[in-house]
Amino acid sequence: ETGVTQTPRHLVMGMTNKKSLKCEQHLGHNAMYWYKQSAKKPLELMFVYSLEERVENNSVPSRFSPECPNSSHLFLHLHTLQPEDSALYLCASSQDMKTQYFGPGTRLLVL
Amino acid sequence: GEDVEQSLFLSVREGDSSVINCTYTDSSSTYLYWYKQEPGAGLQLLTYIFSNMDMKQDQRLTVLLNKKDKHLSLRIADTQTGDSAIYFCAEIGDSSASKIIFGSGTRLSIRP
Image (tube, chains in turn blue, cyan):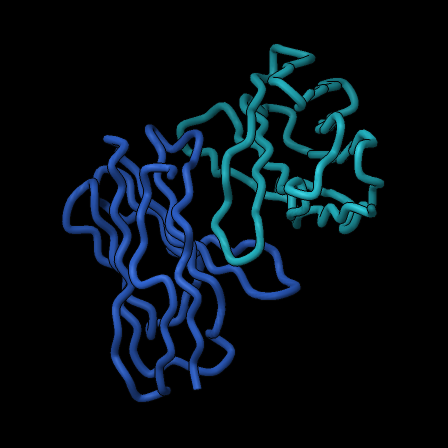
């Protein structure tokens, strides 16, 4: 256990569905991250929140919408996804944007 | 931009030592990391080293840093089947705006 939890662990959704991924950290950190990990591709940083403000948004399509209501929780809202969005979505947290601790990930399949 | 490179695959016989290598370009690196990812799981922080150190040992793991050549290695002694995973090298610079940069990962497989 790293102190970072993610739910659900697995998700299957159709292209017209709306779903949300949840991440919670119990480490008292002040920064949280979303990454996408696809087969045969490097880890892609999607969003970074520091002190609950978004500080990074790496040209991610608008069908992915992050939300950080407080320093312990991070959501990724999904709508009208495409099959190529199927991947492992990883959440991480850190203190002062340094060493990152990862959650177990949500395996997403878009049909 | 800054870059971290690793070889993609390594195959080692059980009981031998594994050495996973990594090179990076950021001359202002402060922390360098090794993460382990088992199938279907997230990235687990294995160990890290400060840039002012040249070696760190933790049980079966030895990290060597050659700052002049910007080369980092992870040695796993007495490699076991449970060490089968993807190992990611990563680094972060010294400014508050620095982002952690990950390598593409090295897949370690263990032969009986």
